[in-house]
Image (cartoon, rainbow, N blue to C red):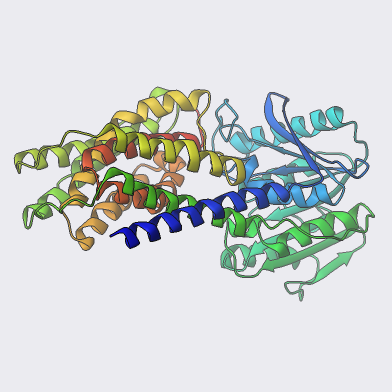
Amino acid sequence: MWKTRAVMVGFAMAMCLVAMLSIVRLEQQRDGVSAERVILAETPVTLWRSDTMKAGPLVVVAHGYAGSRQMMQPVAIALTQAGFTVATFDFLGHGRNRAPMTGDVTSIEGTTARLVEQTLAVTEAAQDATGVVGPVSFVGHSMATDVVIRAAERSQGVAAVVAISMYSDAVTPTAPEQLLIISGAREGRLRAVALDRLRQIAPEAVEGETVTEGRIARRAVASPGVGHVGVLYSPVTLAEVRDWIGMATDRTLSGPLPRIAPWLAALLVSLIAVMWQASGLLGPKRAGPVRMGRRLVLILTAPVVPALLVAILIPPGLGGLYAFGALAGYLGTWGAVQLALLWRANVLPERPRPLAIGMLLIWGLGLFALALDRYGAAFVPVGPRLWVMWALLPGTVLFCLADAMVVTRSGWIAAGIQRIQPLIVLLGAMLIAPALGIAFTVIAVMVLFWLVYGVAGASVRRRSDPVSVGLALGIILAWSIAASTPLVAG
């Protein structure tokens, strides 16, 4: 027994060391770089400057849909360490920006036009704040590729445009003049779009080739082994961005590139492992309860129709923001139906344990969430996101309570159905009621939620009780959705 305990303590200590080393290495990626958070043009902006070089040309870096300034850190750090002055910012409805997106999201004259105006305003304000003169360059990812291309079209003196994971109809044979298009190797459709835009200049061009025609220069490359998010961390991406803007501004650049992805992954995985081991403080593993057998089929399937109806019948703009009211109703209905059936089956909630709840909340919101928010993506709700969190809370708590009580009495197949089925039904609701599709990123958030917080919750549930885990995970799920989902005015 003592040998097993010694191994567990040793493993936990090793994971703590990995986490601390990862933090040190992530901070070292910023060596020679200063990051100043400011408000410019009513927008949260981070100004990145080199501590060792004279201020170079300005580069404005914009994130994609459901992204944030934090997601663009690898690009910002790589450019700043090469001597550029960089401005990253949060679009309306994203990250720390408290103002929602407005306008018709399906129209170029709607939301896109407002984001272009915001980008131009941030660019002008960043030039004033930094004192940097001369041509500016733009870098955009995903949704922002269309925005920065249109912003460059309206700007005077643009050095270069970089479009990462691009989809935009604004690219023509004559604009932008200096355009680099980068796709992840796994983004087949976007690679085809990039090649099509490259062949506007040279019909026989291939990926990896730079083509020119007069003042026009264009290049399309694929970063190996990565997809839509991984492309932002790829060394190939960072080198291509740095070299392209360097060429456009007549600067010869070299040196190491930031390596954020492996250390960020090591940090997050080690934090999960630490929580898995820390759950041992709650006591020995409990004997599993008797499984429910055939009654489980009804409990798994009964919420489908009522939850679907609630999601599509609640006005999508309820509360002034799209999708959150319907989402809260959907999750709450799913959980309430299952809890009612569990009650009828005489499966009653146990008394929660404050230590288990506190342990999950301190780890989930005080360690993991803050680490992700600093090094990966915006994950702390602020401003209107706080009341969004409170509005979601009743629904997410009911949903997670029911989930914990069902999974505790299920085999792994039934537990998988319990987790996957609500996501499939929610996707169906979005297809039936397209206005809900604005929150399509919630599905990805919930998948990641179960992979991270579900694993941590399972370790606690085995030594505590499902009610404590359900309450804690319900709070964390409300936090996760509120912190990461774009705010779109209803």
